[in-house]
Image (cartoon, rainbow, N blue to C red; front, top):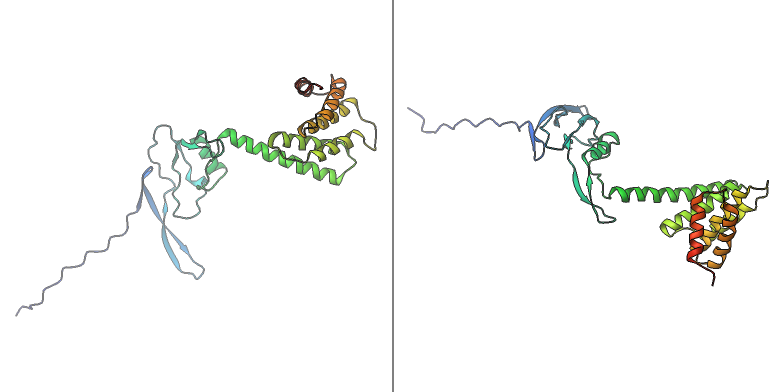
Length: 250
C-alpha cells in the first residue's frame, strides 16, 4: 500500500551571495574572495573589491589607481574614478570646485583617508597656511631670542614676525616687538650698518602705528625715510611715506 504521507519537495539549495557590489557610480564591482587567519589559527574568508576593475569613465572623470589608495577595511569602496565636486567654503561661503585631479593627489599621492575632503576654497586654504606660517615664524623667533638674546638678527626677526602677525590677524605682543627692535638697534657687539638700523626703525615704527601711538610712529617713520633711501626695500619706504601722508602732524 502506498504511504499516505506526502513527500516533501526538496529544499532549494541556498544560493551564495552575489560576487558583485552594485555602486551607483561604479556599477557592478566584482568581489574577490580573500582568506585570512586570526590569532587562534582559524581561517576566515571575506570579499574584497577587485582592484583591477575599470568601469566606464563619465565625461570629465579621471581614472583612479586603487592600489595607491588608503583602504582601511575590506568594506571600503575604492575610488575607481574621480569627478569634480562642487562645494561651499566654510570660511568665506564662496562656491568652489574640489577638482578630480586634486582628489587623485589627495587620496593616492598623500594617501588621505576618504573621509577627508576640501572644506575651504583654494584662496582660504592659502591664507590658512600663511597664517600658520606666521605663527610658526613668531615661535621660531622667540626660540632664537631665548637661546641667543644678544644676537641682533634674532631680535630683528622677532620684531618683524610679531608685526607681520599683528598686521594679518591682529594678534601678537606689540610691546615685545618694539623692545626687540630696540635691542636689535643697540647691540652689545660690533656696530651695525645704516641699512640694518633703518630696518629696526621701520619695524618699531610699524609696531607703534599698530598700537595707535601715532606720535611715536611718526617720529620713527620720518627718521626711517631719511636714512633708508637706497639701503632697504623700496616697498617699505613707500609704505612709510604713505602712512606719513595719511597721518599728518596736528
